[in-house]
Image (cartoon, rainbow, N blue to C red; front, side, top):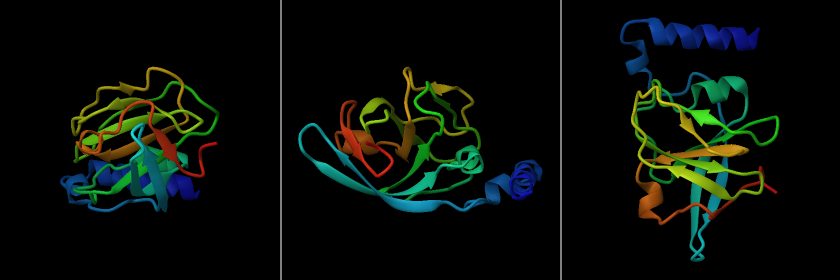
Length: 156
C-alpha cells in the first residue's frame, strides 16, 4: 500500500502542470552515508551520499532536484547481483557524472556530463552492482577514473 501511494504521488507530481519543475526535494525518503573514492594516485575523496536501494528510491533518484552540494551524490544499489544496468536523465534537472561500480567497489565506467531530461539510455557496458551519481564535472575535477575504488559498506 505504501509503495502504491508513493507511485500515485510521483505520477501526480509528473502530470500536474508545473508541479515537476516546482518540486525541489525528494518525494520518497533516502538514507544517507559517507562514501570515499580512492584514486590510483592515492588521493582520497569523501562524499555524503543518499542511498537509493528500494525500487521507489531508484525510480525517483535525483529527479526534480535543482541543485546538489559539491561533495554530495546518490548511490544506487541494485539487488540481484551484478548485471548490465542502464540509467536515464528523465526529469533530472542537473547534469551528472555517472560512475558504474562492480561488486568489489571498482569503478568500471564513467559517463561524464550527462544531459538533463535526456531519455537516452546510459549503459554500464558490463555487469555492475551500483551506480554513483555526482555533479557533472566532479570526476574531471578530482581526476577520478575507471579502475579507482569506491569505499563503502555496500562493497566487499
